[in-house]
Image (cartoon, rainbow, N blue to C red; front, top):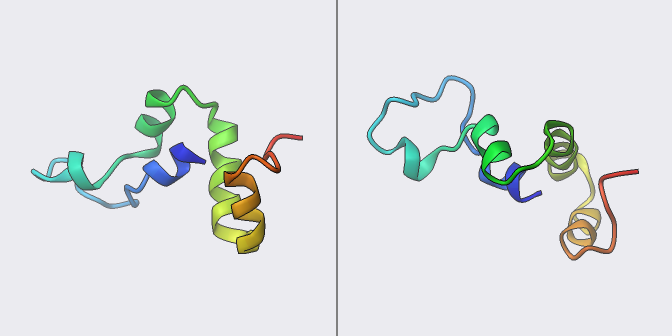
Length: 68
């Protein structure tokens, strides 16, 4: 979930801009920095975007996992 929150670079963002390191982190970099599997990243990202807020909170507190 941390990698999914960290990865905030949208498609089309200019990675050459002076502020990109401060404001934008591509998915690939977030996954590598936090040593997270790409599939886990995608599952967490989907959970953040589509799940009920209660489920997101349960995941963030460790009550549930995105893994089976």
